[in-house]
Figure: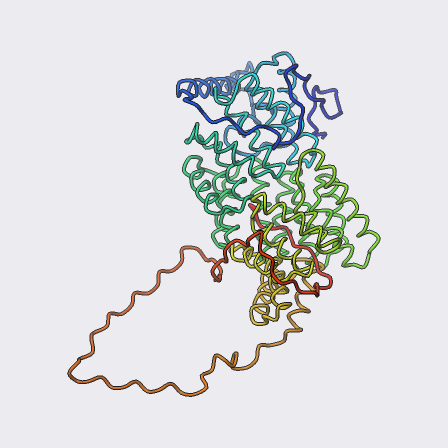
Length: 564
């Protein structure tokens, strides 16, 4: 079945954008849109009227219709997609296709229908995100701008503002997404629909405190599978594995619609992979694909786990299928590294060239893929170029664990291990259980002759996921073997050179005060790994001493945990 959005049942080509409005603006990227104006005495009456009108329109579309034999008519794909959006759930790609086609036809004859234009733009964003067809982001931006021209956001068109926030997140412009989302939040603080975009924006910016607060608020306002999924991602990003697993399982058990169920199963597969359980990961990814064949991300997850099981031929086929159906640069990097680990250097170079092409094409559509490009450059290209790419990200307040880890590793590969250590430690201190982060930190510490912490982090990498990367995992074991076992008895400075002096007896005239027993420390509420205190954020102007030796050869980081 062809699931590309269509304008009519006969057409088999991707739809053309709706005829441009004379007032339409060109698509220039999410950051090209001016920041939303501050709400100046926007009346509650207008906001309430807009919400009621939207609810009436949606309710009218979902009213059951008698089909002539006394039974209510089953909802069609458009109604199912609308119902999923109303519930904050995922719609199937085929239902999303039907919704796009329906709204395209409607706005052709009703070009001033602001809610329909906003729905169309938001559906374009979702289609582009789940198909990796970045060309649809420009169509989304055009539709959302037209919606705001007809009805400005401060006059009740918060849906278009939320669409622009989702678009900015999809393009990895998290600052713009934060501005749009917070503007809607000020206007409608009890609207649950604003919190998913804010969670994504705060996570992309590395603001764990704000992301946690937004997740908790979303859970208060919107119960059910969507809230459980977001909570599981939050626990995962903090390294609380048991909590993440329990919550993700509950989400999978309670999900009823195929797309939502498949997404929940995919999450369970990723958690199993990160725990170093590839058999369980394959089982969960297979279940996700059986539930919804369009859950293409599970093809790449399955390939990753198959590599760990030495089922290389199956892994190659799964990666190729994933890239064909969901052409993301990260998958091209992973397949290239698999080829390289097998000694197929020509095939690896082909994949790396495709990665560069995909990143360039995404950039034309306003999508920033600097993180994956920097990971590639650090290990297979120009580490100095990787550092420059990631410094731009850091200055733009993109300070997630993934960016901190990548910048620390790129600095190390460029011969600046002292500076790189600060960023690598910052990534590890977030608590996320990522074998690549531990590996990078351990290698940098070994380079700086900090052998004790280096051994601990390399052991953690191998213990967390022994096959986290086809290139880096063997290097982690080699580095650990080279360090050897710790010396018996511990470091010399930990053993006193002479016995401590005996305490002097107290005079009998001064009786010893009765001491209160100390209360036991409260048990942590989450099973988080022990961490050293997080260092302050590295200063941009700081110029640490550079080491002259770069680590020779390593694999790039495995996909970071997300929420990341």
